[in-house]
Image (cartoon, rainbow, N blue to C red; front, top):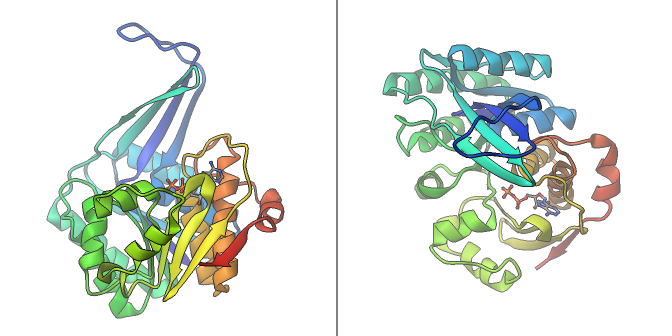
Length: 311
Ligand code: ADP
């Protein structure tokens, strides 16, 4: 089973407006409300790939209840740690091909609430083969929180696929216990390195990933949107080429990619099959309106078109 962690889940609300008027009343009858957050996207795509998944993290209040109800409706098993505080809403206003987002920060948690989650996490590790950790930490938890999770999982011998960015990723890289995999996109890698990369300059990417700070992490998957991915697996480098896609909505493709990686790794697939599975999941997500969603019926069509080449 795969444990999908979302520390700051949300109710994702999208309002489809024919026209958005600032400083005026905007009425809306096309509304969608779903359980959101990167880790829940991962959980959903693992489920859609017929993988065995358990969703966890910290939730609270009526919005927390809504999140668990939605997961139950989607037949995604869940076991969250609870807080007295209310989980957050993330609102997207869709208007004339544009998207305006309002993202609540979410609850500020106490150290004790963090500890309670770590206890639950330790228990859940007993029944899972692999963990995915996605997204940002809630306010109140220190940047080293993911390091603590890595240490606990490492002691239990359970690998972690870590999809975070900024200072959290920075601390993860400094930790003694390493994740099995990280999946920065090009922006996240540029942020981390403090320099801009071109998605086409694989020689530069290779040099960056050979640096000391990336040692000890088996898999580094740099996802490159329409250009596929550049990957380091142990001491080997790969360029993953994908077909041209008529994209409907790319939001959540990175999460779908993480889901594909987790499913393939949990099944001990080869390097080539793991990368093809991951890219296919990412591509399938771009073909859907919904975020963190794939239609498995098209899996084989796209899988066949992906090329993994040594670099
Ligand atoms: P993130 O969502 O984390 O920024 P990416 O944008 O790199 O991640 O997308 C992850 C994967 O999804 C890509 O490696 C690719 O397989 C697929 N993907 C994303 N955008 C596109 C696109 N425009 N065309 C084709 N595939 C895409």
